[in-house]
Length: 266
Image (cartoon, rainbow, N blue to C red; front, side, top):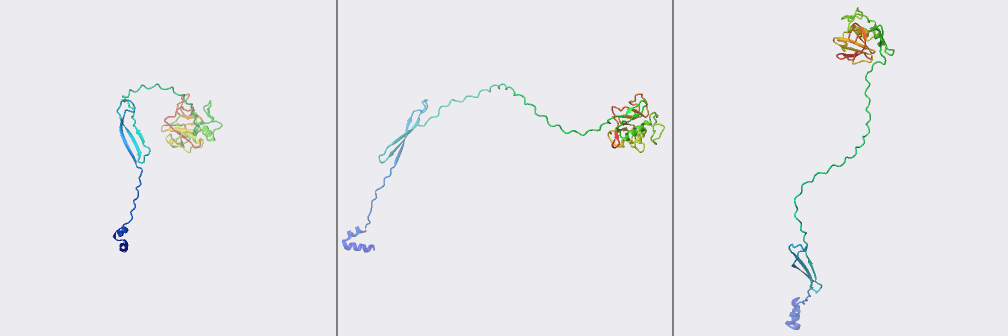
């Protein structure tokens, strides 16, 4: 196609016309001018802003100019200087402790706690005790159980009998009685013992501890019995007349060295 056009141009106007026709048209675009901002920073020197005679600080000036003749804005900034600090001296000694303040009032006492449960009641003696009559026999209390009254009545039968070592061991019937023989006779009268026992055998009789109405105190060498608040014994210990043999006597303040045994329920 280009050759065709060239050919046509040569034919119409010659070579110059052909060259002119072939050259493309050029358009010159006017350059766009951008408003460029030129900023300049000028370093100057300004005096000490605090006026304290310290070193000077550079002052910076910022200038902005528009290329189209616009307004020029110039600003200046001067940095500030921190106030000079005096040197810190050494810490002084600690001062004395101040006096203590007055103590507050004592708080009131709190309420008393609840009372704990009452413990079990221990065994008590008879509400009424037997009494020794003028003839040496004992009078049983009215509220005593039948076995207790019968044991006291049996013991009364031996009052005035002599002391006899081993008496009453082979049989309840004897011409004299020793300690365990007399105790066996009284207990047999209350249907509490079937056969005589010696003092060692009484250590395993009945139940351990004191009874309410009847308590046998025994060891391998001696035995006696407390019945309804009186002591039936053959020894002279605590006897008002210092006599031996089966007799009613006041109970002892101490039963140390003896085991306490009692019949069931009494």
